[in-house]
Image 1 (tube, rainbow, N blue to C red):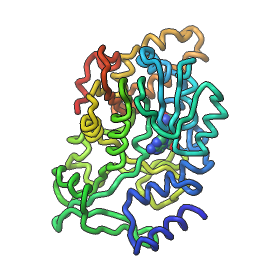
Image 2: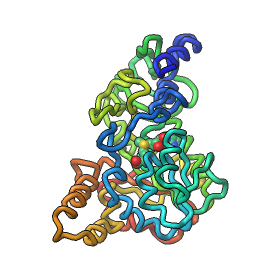
Image 3: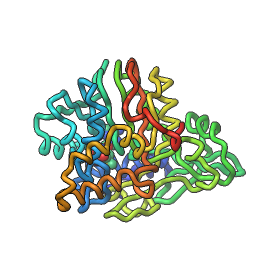
Amino acid sequence: MQAPARIEREIAAAGGWISFARYMQLALHEPGVGYYASGARKFGRGGDFVTAPELGSLFGRTLARELGRFERLLEIGAGSGALADVLADGREYLILETSAELRSRQHRRLGNRVRHVEHLPAGFRGAVIANEVVDAMPVHLVHWTERGILERGVGPGLTWADRPAAGELMAAAEQIQVPVPYLSEIALAARAWMRTVAQTVEEGAIFIIDYGFPRREYYHPQRATGTLMCHYRHQAHADPFARPGTEDITAHVDFSALAEAAHDAGAEVLGYATQAQFLVNCGITEVLAEANVENALHYAPIAAEAQKLLSPAEMGELFKVLAVGKGTTSPLAGFTRGNRRASL
Ligand SMILES: C[S@@+](CC[C@H](N)C(=O)[O-])C[C@H]1O[C@@H](n2cnc3c(N)ncnc32)[C@H](O)[C@@H]1O
């Protein structure tokens, strides 16, 4: 069975309506039918999107300067294994990956340099890294209207259907002040995930790297139709019903919500910065300086990579790095200077 039929069956079984979060879970992650579960290429030039580790090794080598102090690394959602390929340097390197297809791809690429785990290991000590993982977690859709706060879900034939919001979603939606009508996402799954990870780490830091904003920008009056985006062969569009199961669906990350969830679970914010500021603080210019400037063939791709990672028009400002943790005493290098452009 393919994703559309699987989704229709579930909508019918549920009496004609499922939440958008459930739709996104099925379309992206359901074993056998979801986009991440399927054999689609996904990453890189021949796929649907390019992430920072897919650009080359500069991102990983710069991040390695921050991670050197940790005895053990745990990557969540490792994709094609590109970041692990740079960071797995003999230290214990664990990967927690929900997609069986990507787990086997990672295994083929990385062999016994990494070890896959099914769950977060209890009492983990070390660094946890999640690059572009939280944006792929299912979000609920909320429609603030003059008639009250509604939850936007999915009906038969993949159509939008609103019903009154309730429970945890309603409580979260009531905390957000927006001019009506206003449509946006609330990432209950990402908050729960953050609480679990923060609870499970006994000592160390959790780095969440993704595109997104603090709450005041996320729910800005002018962003009245939310941040849902789909990616298919390097084209971005906003219709999540176009190709369920064969394209990526994402939402930007509300970093304030993640920081609060981590705090609820006993972790503290260790730093928050734009990706550009973080990489500069970690010493990306020193890493660049190791490249052979005399050899244009060698240097030009690395310079282009740096430009993509750092430019405000590319990933530099939209992408943020949030680190939360427990029991880490000395400050992290990535947040030492000038975070004027990013505050939670
Ligand atoms: C957009 S890809 C990013 C991959 C890689 N980190 C990169 O930057 O290239 C999202 C990855 O997260 C995985 N994933 C999504 N939700 C997850 C979860 N809750 N736990 C673990 N992995 C997850 C996906 O299967 C995929 O490997």
